[in-house]
Structure formats: C-alpha cells, structure tokens
Length: 315
Ligand code: NCD
Image (cartoon, rainbow, N blue to C red; front, side, top):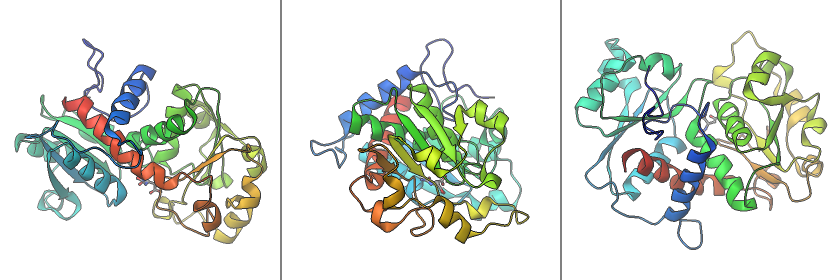
C-alpha cells in the first residue's frame, strides 16, 4: 500500500484520497493555486517550473474535463505530457495488472502519473514498483475524486473568503458519486457542514453517510433550506445496476434544481456542478447559466488547482 503522506516529513507524496488529508495541506494548495491565477482570476499564468518533467495521463476509464484539465495544467507548468488510453491498449487486452502497467509507465520515465479507473485504485495499486514516481487519483469508481474535491472547496474559498461554518447541500446521485465523497470530505475538513439528498435508491446507507460526515435529508426542501452552497450531481447511469429502475421524470419532479427551488437556499447561495451536466434533468439551464452559478469558474479554477498539486508533488 503506498502512503500518500511521507511519515518522516509530513509532505504530500501522492494524492489518492482526501480521507485523512490535513487542513494545512489544503491551505498550502490554495496558496499555490492562487499564485498560478492571473490578475483577473480566470486564466492561469504559464511558467516553466516543471520543465523537463514528464506527466502521463493513464486513463482506464473515459474522461473529458479531468484529463484535459490535468494536461493543460501540466503544459502550463512546462512539463511534457503523454496521454495513454489504457482501455484500448494491449496491456489491458493481455491482462496485465494495473500495478504492472503503472510500473512500466514509471520506468519509461514518468515523474507523475494521473490515473482514472472504474474500480478501486487503492486496491489496484498494491505495491506498485516505483520509488520515484508520484501518483494522482483522477477519479476511481465511486470512491474518490480528490482533485475535484479540492477545486470545489477552493472555488468556494475564493468566492467567500473561507468555508468554515458554511452549510453545503449535495443533491442527486450520492451513492455512485466519487465527487460527493471527496467534495464532502473537503468541506468537512475545513469546517463546513454537509447534507445530502437524492432518491432513496441513490443514497448510501446510514452507516456510510455517517462515515462520510454527511447528514441525509428527508427531502429536497430540507436539504436546500438555508444552504450556502448547492452542489448538483448527475445521475451516473453507467454505474447504476440494471436492477435499479430509475424514473427520470420522478427525479426531475423531486430533485431538479430550478430557480424556484434555489430560492429556498440562502439569499447569496452559490451553485456548483462538477460536470458533465444533464441540463433539464438535475439542473435547469436557467440556474446553470444564472448569477449564482460558479460551474464554469470551477472548470477554470481546476487548472490552477491541478497546477498547484503537481507543483507540490514534484517541486
Ligand atoms: C465527474 C466524474 O467523472 O467523476 N466528472 C468530473 O470529473 N468532473 C462526475 C460525473 O461523471 O458525473
């Protein structure tokens, strides 16, 4: 099992999960990410801090924004980038283990490997052969998506000057969402409270909700009332067992966030969504493109946050 924090120095070596990540590391990442944004705050400042270093995106599952965001972040730091679609590789077809595939990439010269995987990366990594390489989990199964959690919490921190004491409501398919898990952990680590609601068949059981530090709400109104931050999630149809019958019409009538429902939240509440959005299903275009939405700010901030992460791990 690889340790994400070096026990001797307390420094971050890998980013696999936000579980157990101390608040000081968030603050350090916020400061670095801030330094990578331009004056207007909507584009990153390009530099050569990682010139000569090699980042490999090793994706065992498809991705658009996460792989693009990591690639753009790495290039903005002057690093070389290789994108490897492992799904279509002979390594997969010949049943090489994930740990061996990553060991090969590392011995080919990667300094950093960003991985996305449909299963549990912590299990898959095992005792991967490499001392030098750094790993970032770019999303694994329904477990963790730590860079998304970091960019979500930083987006709110930038907008409001901090997150302590905020009430965060996460709405939608919580059960299958790695974003819900990592984002909830990010907010609770920094002192916010997190509540969640979704169709009963898309909610984790009570024990898991407690472990995740989220309060389950009876209905949408209970979740939204007074919330400072509203986070909408897509229904992860590709992860839903065929046995679970899902009625989109029912979901829309009970959980879709529209401008009327958003009125239940605090007067200056902000609206987030990790994407991809299903406009008209979990969110209406009116609110997605409305004044409270920070959905595209999240995307822009994601590049600076990922630069901060790479800089921290390799710098
Ligand atoms: C999410 C993911 O893949 O976990 N997207 C993302 O990375 N921003 C959320 C999703 O697929 O619904």
